[in-house]
Length: 467
Image (cartoon, rainbow, N blue to C red; front, side, top):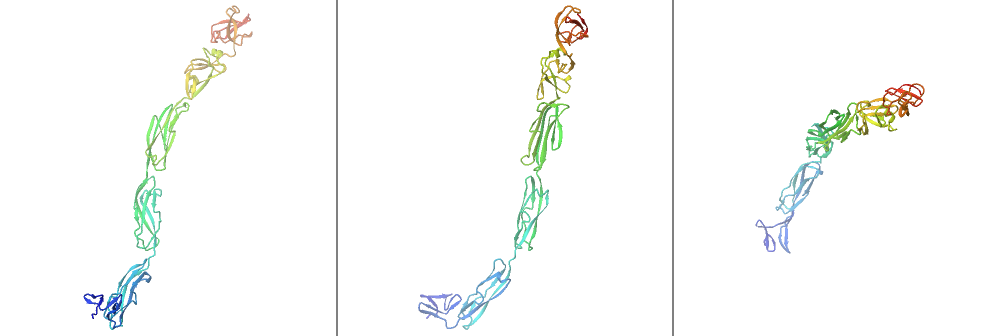
């Protein structure tokens, strides 16, 4: 009978030789059946044993690693002289710990004789395991001394210092440095981007980011222009405290400033001599003063300030009655209005002025004709444009009927004459005039039938008597 192992009619062979033993895992099967038929029986000897021993040479805390697979005491059994495979033990570094481990497993072999013998096999573990390294903190600071023109108002640096981060020593330490310039600033800054290197072993360390470059405040520009159309006055303008006068126009005057700064322009008119403005003059285009604030909205802009107006000498007034006489007495006697009328003139001297009837906001019009015009009281204004004078009228003028012609009481022709105070018996009569308009005449004798008087051509009484 064959000593091999059969499955059905097929003999199980290994490398062409009949298999006399069978092994399941690490256990050697010494007797085998197919159905109820015993196909082999090698159990004449007791099994021998190989017991595993683990030599642990790992340096470091045991909590830092895990041993698995075949552990100490693991036993392989089998018939003497039969073979067994190598032992299989594993060792791994636990999470959070660092290090490395190598495993030298006990090799395979043959079970020792005689049966029932027990021997040991050794698996060796070597390596080093370290405890988890605690994290350390690190903060960032910035050195901006290398940025020309930098001030705290120039912009912002992020992340804002100290921007503390944590990590294990030797791991990557990183801040993404970004410099953002504020509105109104320009330039460039170097040293931006990822900064930090690796975490040092010391806790609460500080990393200094070195920044460089150059920044400056943005200069915005603006333009002022000025125009003037003045008569009798001189225009002047001012830009930010620097003033000047001009005759027709000025500008453009360019100004510049940084964000938020202002520029102010003004325009004004100064009266020449004793002139005064006519009416509501002067008038302004865009006002007499403008202020702008420098920034993107005003950059490159412009504005024109203009002044227009007319100034003349002061407006004087004189009150006259509107009747125009041929002499002072005529004006006083025949003034056609009981209400005084105001007439206007430029300047301060009515005797050297031209009189106007209308004053419309400082613009005079309606010239007065030359002649004698009565004033309030017993005066008359002998007006001629550019040359006038005030003359007196005879007081207490009386208009009466008298006889003229003959001497001293003859020819009692009735006529109307102006005399001073009427006829009286005492003293010479003071005649206003010998003509009906009071403006003078020739030598004549007049009487009222009781008294008589003669007069000179000047209009004053010369002698008198009774009829």
